[in-house]
Amino acid sequence: MKSERQRQAENIAGSNFDEDLQKFKEAEQIELRRLEKENKRIEELENSSSYNAIKKIKEVMDDYYVDGILGVFGVGDWLVCFLGLPTIFFSLFKLHSIRLTTICLGYFLIDLLVGAVPVIGDICDFFYKGYKKSYVLIDGYIHNDPETMRTINQKFFSTVLLLLLIIAIVGSIVAFILYIMAKFFALIGDQIH
Image (cartoon, rainbow, N blue to C red; front, side):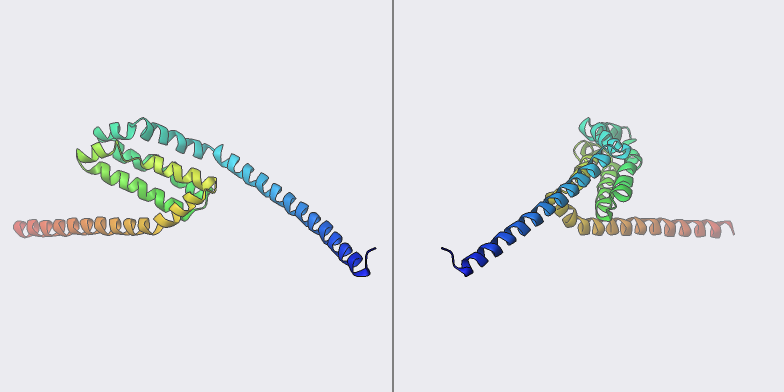
């Protein structure tokens, strides 16, 4: 024989169990819809022409060492700027990630600067794989890989500092060249008068 308190406890436990089961099923349905939506987003991104262009550029330029070969002939360094555009477009306008875009810009800028150094830079072009690094980050970002997200967050500030340093150096060089040109033309002007 059960006491009144035992019957009340069983009723309460039973009703809580049914409610909890219902809540669990609802939560499960919500999660399934979220996963379905996420998988659809990933599929759309992976099937986009921009993503496929990035993948193909990475394959040709880094996996087949075309970047290094073109660097030997002096073409690869400037081709980096042009072939980096799909990556910048995709990361900025499709993924809406300023951090990822900044890091990809940093990779391409390093690739450009390394390749601009005569002989040594051409050799380094065979080993520095900026397209591959960018592709790996983009792919990890698309799949919400925690390690990729951590890498992006860690590299963002150092990349910003690197970009600011490069801008300052280039600005100083341009200012110095303009100063030398002004002095030169002033000297020529004095010689003519």
